[in-house]
Image 1 (cartoon, one colour):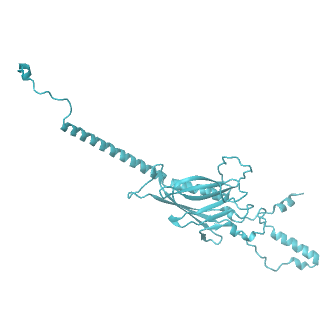
Image 2 (cartoon, rainbow, N blue to C red):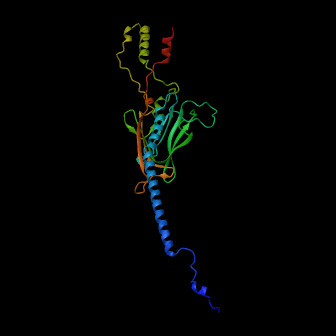
Image 3 (tube, rainbow, N blue to C red):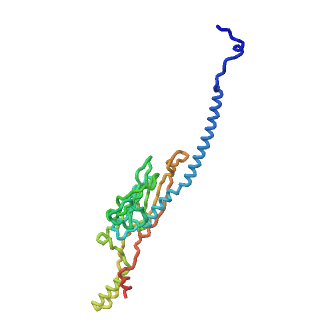
Length: 299
């Protein structure tokens, strides 16, 4: 064994480079504290963003859907288009409702992507239906059919409106001021099944026509009393093919592309939006007979 020299005896054991266990614990503790602070700031920011988005979207989506339905319903038409002009299908009540509504309208609709062989008129078939979506939500679709010569209230192109719909409920105000759960214009117009739907139009010249007929009868019989009609005129009741108004009730989930917003208990936030939309064209508007008007204008 070689004897150690003076320099070797003065040197102790060499210390290895690195961190001690205490130093590592301190660094990890500091890093964890910084990460906890960052997470807290990030979580607060995300919650604030969600609150702002929820408050911004709350009511806006529902009102937007209501406005679209309002525009379509206020353009509803029925004259000269046959009996299939308005149908409301009952699909339950309140938060379990999945109603359907189909009708003809003059409201603007998007142009068809493909060219039709037949001429597309200014009137289109429009409908609103729910179809099952993801996570027990329903998706609201708007149906548009441009060519309405055959089955105007069936088929067509469906466009997604909103994907977080719990229920859709329609009610219809009838002629007797009662609210109904369903509506079928073809049933209401059944009494006119022998009429020509393409030319059906009431005029207000009935009184003049009666006077003219009475004058003809008096001339033929020579009895001036034939001009006097003591009997009561029988009123012909014209059916009301469209409801006076439609109540729309939507149960919507509030959310964005990340999904529905949740409340403090972790349940989806449900918003109820409703509106009563009057239909002006539901009333029978009495107009002058155009043939009589033309005769009066002729010199």
